Amino acid sequence: DTAVSQTPKYLVTQMGNDKSIKCEQNLGHDTMYWYKQDSKKFLKIMFSYNNKELIINETVPNRFSPKSPDKAHLNLHINSLELGDSAVYFCASSPTGGDDYGYTFGSGTRLTVV
Amino acid sequence: AQTVTQSQPEMSVQEAETVTLSCTYDTSENNYYLFWYKQPPSRQMILVIRQEAYKQQNATENRFSVNFQKAAKSFSLKISDSQLGDTAMYFCAFMTSWMDSSYKLIFGSGTRLLVRP
Image 1 (tube, rainbow over the protein chains, first blue to last red):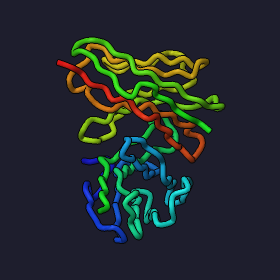
Image 2: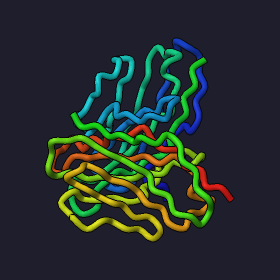
Image 3: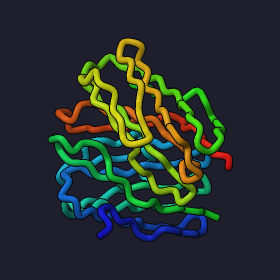
């Protein structure tokens, strides 16, 4: 069983299109995240949701809209895609406290905008 | 603001040898957690080892161990008996205490490790 699963794994699309990336976790974690890894491998947080509530929004353009229908899902919708949006997007989850701390990451979605 | 610095963009080690990856961080927090993640070419982020700031004892996971120097804000990773499968990007990361609902994981820029046969 995959703990944090993202779909699709690869996404190639044209500038101006709208696309979504889905994320689901079966770990029972309360908090989910989206991270962006750029071409230089730098990882930076975009959003954090705790029990469907937005906690962190790191000055991400409003073309990016996360949606959390329940605490096991956090989807990322991107409008009007730009070349600079090309990156690997990671979904992750973490528990709320306890001994099991730290993130569990999905396998990433490589987005290529052409 | 918290920052994490990895000053070694690339490192190379002979198989079976030992290598140490450096990491320093800056924070005014007293309770936090530190991590090393491995990212092989498959791009999966794999947790290697973690350390609670309140614990003085250095964490160890098989061939992986850390040297945690809280006063110096240093958190280095030592890989013993390096194996070809250790070839990957290694990221040092900092996280504020889990009592805060915004559990932001802040990453360093990574060190690319190549294990030579």
